[in-house]
Amino acid sequence: MLKKGIVSLSAVAALATTAFAGGDSNIAEQLVKMEKMMAAQAAQIKELQSQLGANSKLGDKIDKLAKKVNKNKKTITAVKKHDAKDNIKFGLDFRNSVDFISVKDNKGNYFNEDVGTKKSNDILSTKLDITMVSSPTDKIVFRGKFGVNSVWGGHPGDVDASFKGWQSSSRANNHEFKLKEAYVLYKGDNDISYSIGRRPSTEGFLANHRNNTSKPNSPLAHVTNMEVDAAMVRLGESYTKITGSYMKIIYGRAHDAVDSVANMYLTDSTLTNGTEIVDDQEVDFFGILGNIYNDGTYKLMGQHMVILNTKGAKDDGDAIYNIDDIEKAAAGKAWVSALSLEVSGLDMIDEDSEALADTIAFASIAQTNYQPNEGYTLLGTDQDTKGHSIWLGATFPDQLTEDGRFGIEYNQGSKNWTPFTWAEDTMIGSKIAVRGYATELYWNTKVSGFDNLTAQVRYTRVQHDYTPNQKCQGWITPEEVDILAENMSFSVRYRY
Image 1 (cartoon, rainbow, N blue to C red):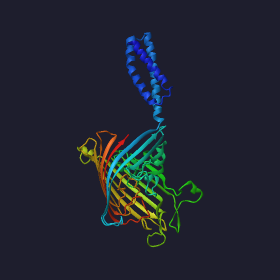
Image 2: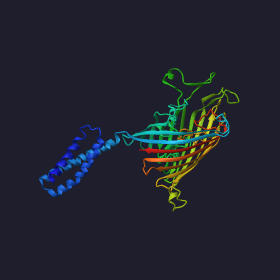
Image 3: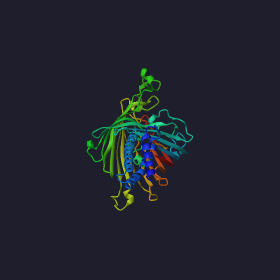
Image 4: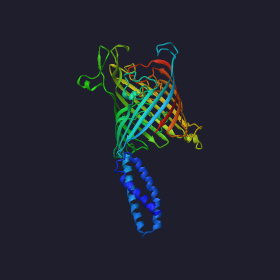
């Protein structure tokens, strides 16, 4: 037994000293194997030492081998620490769904067809996001995400050429991977951090509940639910001086007037109706958002932003809007503001109720204010137009399964309510942007108890009382309509 133990110890020592020199591409697997071998030998070392005694020459040899193994164990630990930093970690979010949609025009004036015109379809779709993250130091983090959202048998490209890259990346209309996130974060000293790139701006605060995502992204989904190219400075609690709070200052760009590098040597992109040319200006945005208060039960967030040179119409001087007015011109400013509250646990109502203790309720109010420049119109008028919206919801245990949750939400928006939420993942468009009201019911659960495999059943009903806001089209005048859109969705999602 002694001879066998010495031979096995020697093998471990030899493997540990030569594994790195061979340049094995599967180094992580080798490290795991060596750790298991050395753990198994630890007990043998103690047993052999106790049998041989402290003065045995054979015992001295075993002691030397033990020291060598311990030394290599430290080396392996150091390599593992380095390996944890020196790589890019990948993840995936894979979802297949079937959606039954129905859109009915009760007045017949929106589809320009008969009263009661109804369009319906069943849609099969696949959504795949590939995520990546690397952190070579404790202060620097890179995050990225590529995504494809395709309809089975659907059109291979965008039908609407006006779609921006960050907009089309959330539409179920293509089989190509598109950039959804790519930004680097630097964690500075004194509770300040900085980042720049395409930010994680969909599935923001409150929208994460219906999407079954525990941790929301930073924007408030009530006014911003789309990808954003921006730079950010974050000030932590040591600056805000309020429990659980922080503030982000953001500057970004949503549209650039230059179509290509060649235009830099010729002229900027322009808009024209054949008789007049209007400069197509850059659309930039600036604002602040963040946690106002968060004690673990109550979380209050706020956002206030301005969009410069937002798209509207160039007024030709007539009293009415007509073909001579130029669409999609840089027409003025758009202000968006929201205040959102989430309460995690309602056991203050009944301390003995486990269901209430695990209930999450939320409420949000928001406003948009479009301010046209002189000679331009926004939302069909040369006057300032304000829109308002409320958003209420709650999620709670289903009392049927161990992990399932029911959710219910209600949205209501006024005639001129025009937020930046068109990237919301719903086949009938953004229910958050509804000019009218919307109700939604959903059930999220784990499949066979697996954390990585989930399922959702969701019903969304949207009643449009005014022209549906699908792309923040500031050149379109909201008109009275009576359109009912319904979406019944079944999906299975795998995340790792």
